[in-house]
Amino acid sequence: MNLSQLLPALAADRVRPNLRIGIVLRWITIALVAAGGMLTPKLGTFLLYLVAIATAYNGGIMVLVARAPAAWDRRLAVAVTIIDSLFGFIFPGLYAIQVAGSEPLSAYVFGIIEAVFYFGAAGAILSLGIFVVAALTVKVFGLPLFGQLFAGGGLVNSMLLLGMIAVCVVATFRLRLAAGETETAAPEGTRVEALDGGEPPVRLSRREREVLRLVAEGYSNTMIASRLRLSDSTVKGYVENLLFHLNARNRAEAVATASRLRLL
Image: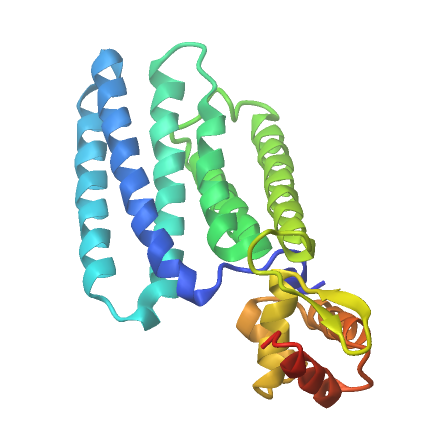
């Protein structure tokens, strides 16, 4: 299965704005981690080093996002996803060895959400892959991070738990995306016009109007799918719906009717 059909990656023009949002959220997280460290003296100086590294890292991302060309956005998104996942693995590991009875595995969920947000279903696989590699490294070399959680069958259980969470996150994003694509009654972005001869009005969703505009500009289904980050089959369904709604036999007739109804 093509992963982009399950859940597409974030559109290219939305990566830069969301990198900026990520910077703000990272500053908030760093502040909360520092505050938590002061309330948990057992974490010691290593936490201070980790906070200092995270501060320098986020500052560097700020500079890159402000000055780097747009062509770098995808690479930056990959980099921050990997680094944030590693931070998400290391930091809660400190609690596992320093704070008795803690089970901080859920902290890694933030890395999964970020990866899915940027890269869709492929991001979930990337995030889980990072966790598996890091966890196996800890297990093979006997490192103390997550030592209690990974004892016995803990490693397998942790992978299964995060895998289930990743599936739920992907499904949630997919359902929300599908709801936005199929919405037809939005108060904005939908125009209702009557066909000539008093035929029933034409109702187009926001996504159908986007597809119609690209069809009018001469885009093929494949080009539309790439532009809107949709699968070819989804775009084909939108085009067929447009032909039905506009009572057109082909794309040219659909564009002509849409133009007459001022839908373009």
